[in-house]
Length: 208
Image 1 (cartoon, one colour):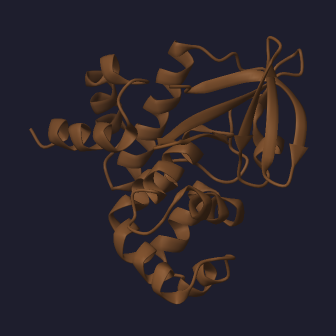
Image 2 (cartoon, one colour; image 1 turned 180 degrees about the vertical axis):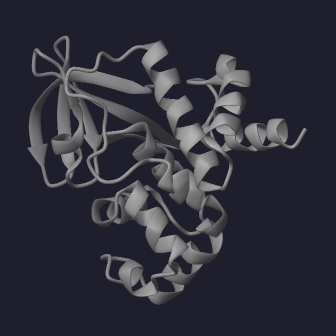
C-alpha cells in the first residue's frame, strides 16, 4: 500500500497528475486545487498523501494535499453509494473543512450544487456524515497545510495526525488540555491508526 509520495509533478491534466519519484512516475487522481495546496520542499518536490484503492481488477491511487483531505475522502467513501469518483468530485468543490461546515449547517443546496450529487445523495451525506463533522472540520480551513519546506517523515505524519485528533476533540467541546492529554496517551498509535478509530479511543480515554 502506498501512503505518501514526494516527487516532482511532471504532468497535470483535469484531476489527474503524474508524480515522478526517483524516475518512477505515479499517476494519481486528485481533487481540483490539490497541487496548489500541497507542501513543496526546497527542491520543488510536492508531497501528496495517498489512498490506494484496490478492488478486483482495479488499482488506483488518489492523492491529497493534506492528511485531513485524505481522511475526508475515506470518510466519504464509507457512505453508502458514494464511490471514489464521487468523493473526489465532492472534495474538488468542498475541501474537508468546508465540507464539515456544510454538513454541520445542513446546507443541502451547497451539496446538490456539486456535479453528480442529486438531492437523495445529498440527504444521505447529511445523514451519514452528521456524526463525522468534528473529523472533517479538524482538517482546518482551505489552504491550511504545513509550511512549504516541511520535510515528510513518520514523525511528521504522527504529528499531523495528533494535531487533527486534538482539533477534532476541541471541536467536540473538550478543552485543549484534555485533547492534548488524550493525544499524548495515544501517541504510540499516531500515524498508524486511522483518525476515526483514534477519535473513538480518545473519547474512551477522556470518559475515564
